[in-house]
Image 1 (tube, rainbow, N blue to C red):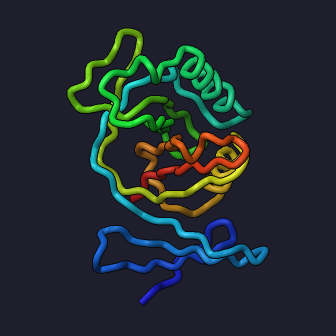
Image 2: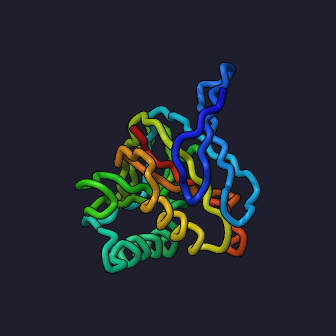
Length: 192
């Protein structure tokens, strides 16, 4: 039997657990603006390795500092064609990872951009690597014009009452996010 839990973006969250899957499926029924029903999910992922670039110092959200710092790292990643230098890639997906939080989203945190690689992959000179541990996630999908849709999704996440773990959170950029006028980006939030 579904049960209503919390609201998110003015949306009722109803959890339905299916016996044939390990994932908990969450249906969000919008109570504002007659929006159509959207599907989000909670899932878990095993640990995996990334290779790419790490921001040299922690950043923070106040006064738009993270937009400056993370934007600069994105510019370096793209202008230096870092994805092309990564060996042992398992896909062309690009991960933007938020981790090593000093507390919640109002406190400093670290940032990394990279691609998923095999565990045995070497880290090329000038690049960094990191391991994402096994975690549970709530997956939020940002849709619309880039980069606004992702920035707006994070604004809503920060205002929400999602029980975040502040472990390793990440965005996944793939073929669905290639059209910046109509992008789709999955945001994985580590949860307790």
